Amino acid sequence: MAQGETPAWNAMSNGVPKDFSRRRFLEVIGATGVAALTGIPIVERIWAASEIEAVQRDAQGLAHQWVMVFDLRRCDGCRDCIKGCQEQHHLPKTDEWIKVYELVDAQGLHFAMPVLCMQCETAPCVRVCPVRATYHRDDGVIVVDQDVCIGCRMCMAACPYDVRVFNWDKAAAIDERFHADTPEFTVPQQQGTVSKCTMCVHLLEEGSLPSCLTSCSMEAIFVGDLVEDVMTNGRENFVLSQYLRANDAWRFRAELGTKPRVYYVSGHGQDLDY
Ligand code: SF4
Ligand code: SF4
Image 1 (tube, rainbow, N blue to C red):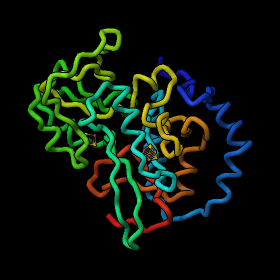
Image 2 (image 1 turned 90 degrees about the horizontal axis):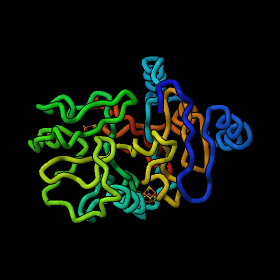
Image 3 (image 1 turned 30 degrees about the vertical axis):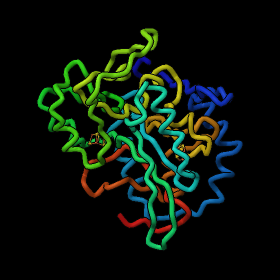
């Protein structure tokens, strides 16, 4: 998609094709989103959302700055997001670019938390790669060029989220029709290189939604754009900054200074203390 072009986010599956242009988005928000938001208490303590405004200022002039939002209140830990990701990228069942952890909060309540590449704005993996095989795209997504990767695994050691996967084995035979060989969409994975979630940016570029998102029957996963200030799960659409502010969104291990581009809304009201 050309820089400056309005994204047409067409829901890829589940029978809800939608034009997610900003105008359409605001129409939808006007009809349903505000009603949904007014039921949610506004919490003042929102450093995640206040930082978003700074990022949005920096993003001026860029076409998109992609983020993801996981609403843990909806996640039931079914792991369908993992399966959708593996199918999209033809990964073996042992390789998980998105993991779903079962956690227990301070009150003893169980909840599920999907974790994937945080697309860190200050990314340790990018900093340590000796051959610059892993890098930031203009839209904030970090990719790995497997033709450049030498498999040293420095990036895996540097990543504080343990979300990179080393391709130990030769990939199983995949029909040539499904082969793709760009840093954004690598099929099959090259033996001796490192892989990770790319936010399905190859799909975002064509106006479709990431595979984990379209696989989630609980509609817990959203993709958003800091520039447009919109987010969608393919059925519901919200103003990104409002949603994060209204729901007291937080970022995983943000105290490390990695500036993750993945946001979480706490599950079931518990006080999460990491
Ligand atoms: S598919 Fe949705 S509900 Fe299932 S584990 Fe993933 S995020 Fe949670
Ligand atoms: S989560 Fe790990 S792999 Fe992803 S950008 Fe951050 S440091 Fe790199």
